[in-house]
Image (cartoon, rainbow, N blue to C red):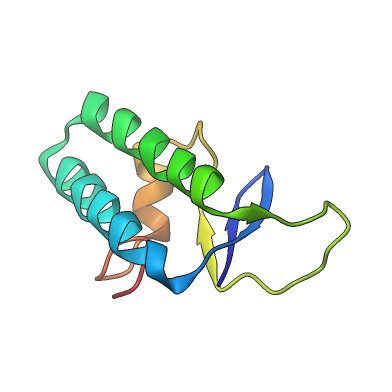
Amino acid sequence: MIVRIMGEGQWELADSHFAELNKLDDELLAEMESGDGEGFRRTLAALLDAVRRLGEPLPDDALEPSELILPAPGASLDEVREMLSDDGLIPG
């Protein structure tokens, strides 16, 4: 699956990594719902770091369609809230 981090680029991730990403996504959603700004920042950073660590970066000139788009590292709680579906940032 191709994952885009807004403002950074794209990574290709194997489906086997989505259990770890979904766990972080669930934590992020809970922190957003409770208004835990510090926890939100920490978990968003962990989620984006996991994508960078587990994925293979695509070249900057690659124009692959992203199946999943994640917010930029500096995104606000409100900006991320606008990107959410019922499942969080990551479906499933």
